[in-house]
Amino acid sequence: VSFGFRAVPEGERQGLVNGVFASVAERYDLMNDLMSGGLHRLWKRDLITMLNAPRSATPFRLLDVAGGTGDIAIRYATDGGSATTAVICDISPEMLSVGRRRIDAAGLSDRITCVEGNAEALPFESASFDAYTIAFGIRNVTHIDRALTEAYRVLKPGGRFLCLEFSECQVPVLDRLYDFHSFEIIPRLGKLAAGDAESYRYLVESIRRFPNQEAFANLVRNAGFSRVGYRNLTGGIAAIHSGWKL
Ligand code: SAM
View 1 (cartoon, helix red, strand yellow):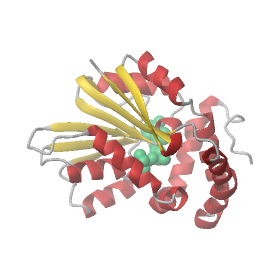
View 2 (cartoon, protein in one colour):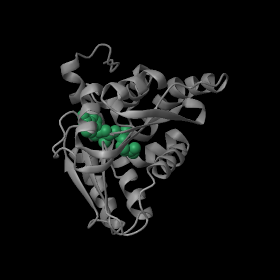
View 3 (cartoon, protein in one colour):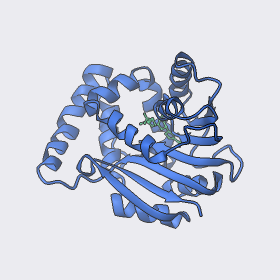
View 4 (cartoon, protein in one colour):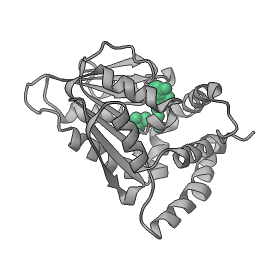
């Protein structure tokens, strides 16, 4: 079977994505480290720094969409003050159950809650969060525009949107190395570590089909966000897009 989602009708994409994450959930964190050589940790650290949540007792409520096993929310709550809280919203019960385990182990279950839901139709009231993050998640959503409109809706006026996602590598030579890594190494690692080359081929294809930095910035603007910009990480292999609901 070819997983390339060129061949997959739009209506079946989310089901396919859910199957991928259900099958990798238990190994997801390990695979992330393995495949990115630990780089995802640095990129996530950059996202948390940009978020700049209060370390004081000021209340601050984050929504981390496609939050999976909790990396962003756990880092944020660990760094933030005692009144910083987070809701993780993810469509995959399997990923969330790994997340809940990690949140309990970190002693953060009073400040982080997990909710099953779709980024395209968030189960939250309008204007109810101070910030919205999505890390390596929006690429998996079938209708990116709907997810962005939902992000805008649930943010309070003055709220911030931050999206960490793979992007277009803009450094010569590094781009060739990155191609080799993507098309030769990742599927093999996927097969070795998870017994599943196809899921990881899906991963690589979804990265290549995602809009580049400028194109994605335009989508964020179209959803209503102001002062939209982005920062490249590791030569553009990943990027953090930022916008404000003003
Ligand atoms: N944010 C985490 C991280 O950076 O480690 C997890 C990223 S993981 C690559 C992508 C996540 O997106 C998975 O947990 C998957 O279940 C979730 N996801 C996929 N489609 C979604 C959707 N439509 N709504 C919400 N979450 C979704």
